[in-house]
Length: 176
Image 1 (cartoon, rainbow, N blue to C red):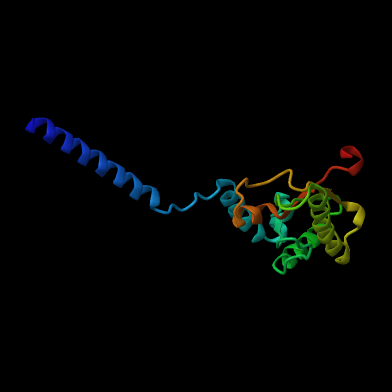
Image 2 (cartoon, rainbow, N blue to C red):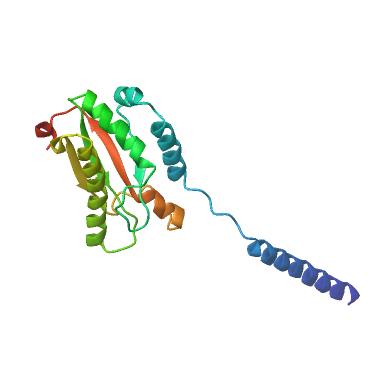
């Protein structure tokens, strides 16, 4: 009888200790893992943003321009970059530019398509004001259909509010 009581008491204590340890582990806040797509985009954008106009003309690679929430205003940091893009396009008449507007998932589909197109149009307008022929720049509005990050945190949504820029040497009639 003593042995049976002792076994039941031991089992009860062990199970109670396991349950309390499991509860303590669940209460520990965990940092969310960073989205590897966002980290890769930030790294690539940093390198591309800091390239010279000559390097930009050789590589034909451009960084994305990120926008504030619900804004079509060109961010202040993007003006030096856009000036370099304009310089490269002035020096290389065969280059054309494709601007691909994107949004986060907040808002209706219709609004997001409009917003992504308006962001790309704002960049185009700035480049045209710098002397680039508007016929050399095409705009595509993708809304929220091409996210970089599926993370619904503020950082994930910020990564999706962007205009991707791409140089091409192909004639428009051959690709449109």
